[in-house]
Amino acid sequence: MNDYLFSWIGFADLKASKGESVGLGPIAQAVTSREYRSIYLLCDCSTPDREIFQNWLANQTDCEIILKNVRLPGPTDFGAIHQATTDLLDETIPTLPIEHKLTFHLSPGTPAMSAVWIILGKTRFPAELIESSKAHGVRTVSIPFDISADYTPDLFKKHDQTLKRLAAGLPSSAPEFDDIIHRSEVMQRVVLMARRVAPRSIPVLIEGESGTGKELFARAIHKASPRRDKPFITINCGAIPAELVEAELFGYEKGAFTGAAGVRIGHFETADQGTMFLDEIGELPKDMQVKLLRTLQEGEVKRIGATKPIKVDIRVIAATNKTLIEEVAANTFREDLFYRLAVAVLKLPPLRKRVGDVSLLIDRFLSQINDVSSKEPGFEHKIISASARNILLQHSWPGNIRELQNTLTRAMIWSADEEIGEADVQDALLPIPRPEKAQAEILNQSLDEDINLPEIMDQVAIHYLKRGLVKKSGNKTQVAKLLGISNYQTLSNWLKKYGLE
Image (cartoon, rainbow, N blue to C red; front, side):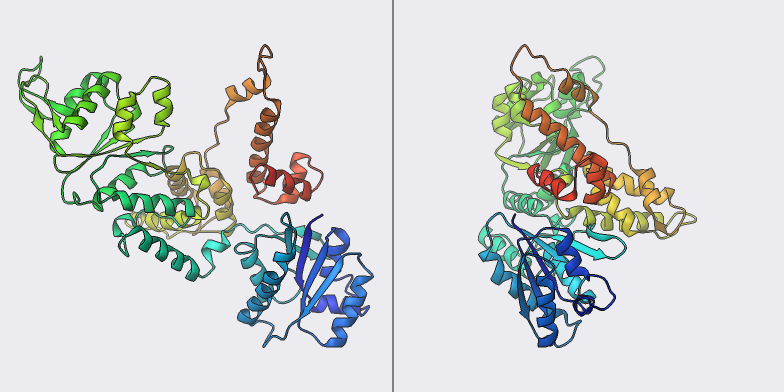
């Protein structure tokens, strides 16, 4: 057992140690209902009170008790509370086993002490947060918001970002990328890569699920490039009928085919000196892939029916919601064209992997939707409740940013009040499609060949753990009960095993 409890000693704990009718008090209630290897306590009280409590608590538990006395200027002095708490943790954690687990008790002490535990438990010292009461006993506290991103000062984070920027040789600001709302580390890295490649004219391949913002990145790269004042032409390769692709991209001469009554300039000529954004490049027909490769290699296009090629200077940014190298392996995409396009490759993460970004996006989209709606009759400025926001934060967003924006738009329409509530969000969320076929395949795999049963069991566990967390808004006690898991600690172990903690 490597669980360690940290807490301030509160007035209720001191009264309990003196036999006053307050029950066991929060700390004793925690250590008698759960097992801990050691208990680390902070105390701002007189020596007699401290000694009475320590002796009394030792009779309640066999845990090792380490008590540190500190003098605070006041019970709500955040600076002093933060300093005392971090000092204790900095001194203690290096002495703990590598596989240790921290628990912070929020109930004892003042609200300022609880706030500091929450901030530290969600940032520098990841920990389980608990509370206790006579009515409900000891339970895990579910904090729905990304405390570290929303409320922690960004001094150190900004310093680190400055060092990264200087090392990369980038300018101090990049207004072209301001529309890419983010603060997650994974997105910071992708934006950094995009900023580095923007000034160069090399091709860029952007891969990512639908709705992750591939065109937004392409436009930002163009705006940050020397071609910013030249055309930016967008072509959706999957939206053009196969028989019209060549004419659309390269144009045609008068009389080149029946109906060609005049000369048509193709998109590549229009984009000369600028940027061509080829969205859904994986949908481009195989015969057109050959012609696109020649254009990229030779820097020239040839209209249908023309005898001479036309020189063009174009930077190509391609995007796909597929993994293009897998399409090459499946022989649906030309290998030579892939390597021509994939000089710089940006992989955009799905929204579910962008820790801390959803809350930012909610605020930005609400502001945008309010601005647009302000011109409509009967407009009422909308805000979102904490519980409704929590539901959005727990959703997996298979449709990514586009789905989030549309969901908020629907929720604002469904909401009859100024505040968007839980019911409005639940009505606005679209059901997550269930892979019925995949589930059937899990249960009906052929045994003519070897199967990987542990892997199949893992898939099932991850599937239901994710659904349980969404259903119960991350409340571990309720999720454990819903899924038939013996207790929240066992659930925590499962979540940790599958990377869902």
